[in-house]
Length: 478
Image (cartoon, rainbow, N blue to C red; front, side, top):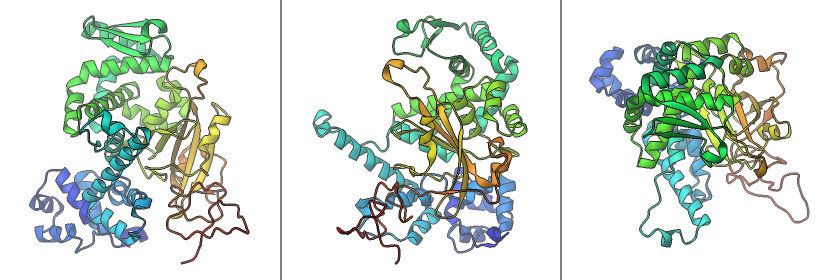
């Protein structure tokens, strides 16, 4: 109740919502039972958004209030704090209240800042990797964002939830009439009968570097024998998604406004994968099973014929109004800490631009392959999250490369943990917690043994006659 009584100035987000819906101020005011002048005052932050108005917004436009009032999207307060923590801006000393105002009052401008910063990082990395890159590509400019980063940010602005694709996935699954381990055979039969597409499993030495390849001329889907059963079923589901709903996928990729052709193609691949998952694990069935099984990923795997990663990823998409699941975040990384996946249906406590907090134990998963570990973490703002992690194999691991696989981390706010089988037996009211921070250059937690960089917000107190447990001691006052 205290949260609702706190004055909320959400003018920028209200204006963005109106524009996203294609509404004029007059039309939105009519929808909400307000005068156009009052709505104008709200958008200019001259009036706070009341609890009653928030409820009307939720009912009228089917909003998730938490997503509307928090900054989980690109350009939010957390992202901007990371941006302005860069040494490039050290002399500006941008105070937190200005960052908060920018994120709240001008979300479009805030997102533009984060995109520009990402472009700056891309350019800096390219310069470090190749000092003669400019000579090799005369006149080439720095891209606004790399395709993977752009696609990741776009998906996050949708909170990794695409209702149209979920509806199409349910329709395709219903028409197929087979789920779980019976799915692959039924889908192969449908591809052959309805679309004259034949599926063939080929020797790995014939496929060479391909795991999946569609021969458009002979209408053959070629799958490498190196693919495991769940990866093979997913590949078949992806082909079925393209065959049945290719026009929709093309339209959605086009409407997203990707900056170039490679980015648009990568987005289409991501949307196709989303639809494939929606066919393999139809929303209503998967949500009901997750709720009844306590989000037991192993049992969800068995019921829907999924891999651990596929099931975990699907859990981050359960944001359908009226049938929402636990709002999970997911992060996937290799043994060196490189992040290759990052999705969030809810709050996400880790760094988006730099390395995450080394106190989070996800990397320990590599020491116990295949086993699930859990940890409750707490941010400097006092927010607590229940997390679990384990290793997963790559699509086609190669023993010759010494492949250690990948570590997958999944988590949610602690208030949701009681619904999870992984939290059974824990005292969630008084749990043992591990304090974590954002990226090290922003973290002000003193005496951290794992600290990898000095916080730019504090003055170092390094002395030649003493040594602390942290390599970068700093003043804790002021």
